Amino acid sequence: MNKILLAGAYALALAMGVADLRDLAAYAAPAVAAAAGPTVKIDNFVFGPEALTVTVGTTVTWINQDDIPHNIVANDKSFKSKVLDTDERFSFTFTKPGEYGYFCGLHPHMTGKVIVKAG
Amino acid sequence: MSHDQDDNRTDLGRPDLGRRGLLKCMGWAGTGALWTMSGGVGAAISLDQALGAPAKAASFSFLQISDSHVGFNKPANPDAAATYREAVAKISTLPQKPDFIIHTGDITQLSKDQEFDDAEQIIKAAGLPVFYVPGEHDMLDEGGGKAYLDRFGKGTKGAGWYSFDHKGVHFVALINVANLKPGGMGSLGGDQLEWLERDLKGRPSSQPIVVFAHMPLWTVYADWGWGTDDAPQAMAYLARFGSVTVLNGHIHQVTQKVEGNIAFHTARSTAFPQPVGGQGPSPGPLKVPTEQLHSMLGITTASITRGHGPIALTDQTLADPTLAS
Ligand SMILES: [Cu+2]
Image (cartoon, rainbow over all chains, first blue to last red; front, side):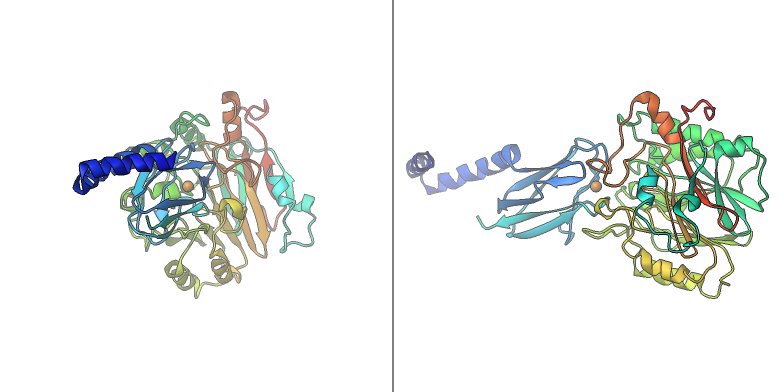
C-alpha cells in the first residue's frame, strides 16, 4: 500500500517538477500536523503516553482531561504552557532532535518525555 | 480515613502513649480548625465545639483555613466561593474571637484577579487579620506568583516567606510551591532554608514555634507528591525547640503525626475533599453526592493538646444531627 502511494507521489512529483513538490510539502505539512499530530492526554494526573516518539517537525498537543488544572514545563525550560484548565490544550512543534523531558509545574511528580528523531 | 494512614506511622516522640491514647476521635464539625495557644501548646478545637463549649484557658487563639479554591466550579463543588463564605460565616460567630486567621494556600483555583478579589471579599466578613501562604493554584498567573505577591507579599522575602511574633509565639510562613523540580514534591529551596536558619538562630528553645506552609512538610504520600523534598533540613533547624506545630493544607483532609517535639497537621479544604493517599486513581477532587459534599467539607479537624492530653483526630459529618448547625 505504502509503496503504491509512494510510487504515485513520485510519479506526481516527476510530473510537477521538483520545485512544485517542495511547494506541495510546504503546504501539506502544517495542515497535516495540526489535524492529525500526536496527542498526550492528561488523565488522573498522568501523561499518556508517558513517553512519545516523534520525528522532527511534529506538533504535539497536550489535552487536560482532569478537573484540576495542570501545565506543561520542559525540564530545560525550552517550552512551557500556560495553565490548562479542564479540556484546554497546548501544542508545541519540535524542530530539533533530542529527548525532551517535561513535568507539570503544579504537580511535579507528573512527568513525561518526547523523543524527537531526525526525519 | 486519616486513621488508616496513622496506622502506618510510628510516633517516635511519644513511645509512652499507645496509638489509641495518642490519637483519639472526638466530635468536631466545621470547615476550619480553631487553634488555641495555651502555654505554647497548640490545641485545635472544632468551630462547633468553640461555639458551644466555654472557652478553655488560653492566652489567645487563631484560626486555620485552607484550600478555598475560589473559582472552582466543577462537579465536586459547583460553587467553592459559597462554601468558603459558609466557613467564614462560622468564624464570625465564635464567642472567643481569634486574634487572626492563617490561610494555608490555594486561595484561588487559577490565580485570576477576579478570584483573588472574590476571596478577599469573602474573608473580609470575618473582620480579622489574615496571614497567607500561597498554594500552587495561586502561582498560575503569567508572572508565576506575582499576582499573589502584589496582593499579599508586602514585606515578605523571596517567593513570599516571612515570620512574626505574636504573644510570645513565633510564627513562620514558608513557601514550598515555587520553583518545583521535575519528579519532585514541594520544595523550599536553599535561599529559604538559609533564611529559616537565620530566623531561628538566637531564639530560646523554649519559645513555641508555629510553622505554616501549603504542602505538607512531611511525606504523607510520595506517589502523589504529598510532601516537601527538602523539609528534613527545615525540621533539623526546628528540632531543638520544645514545641513546634506545623500546619499545612493541600491534601484536603486531616492527617497528623508527631515526631519528637514537632506536631504535623493538615487541615481540610473549604472547597472539595480529596481521597486518602493512594485510595483512588488520582489526587483529584473526590466527587460525592451533592447532599454529602457539605458534610465532607465541614466535618474534620484535629485537637492538639500536647502536655495536657492526647492529640485528637476527628471524622464526623455535618449531617450528624448532633452537629448540624
Ligand atoms: Cu498537574
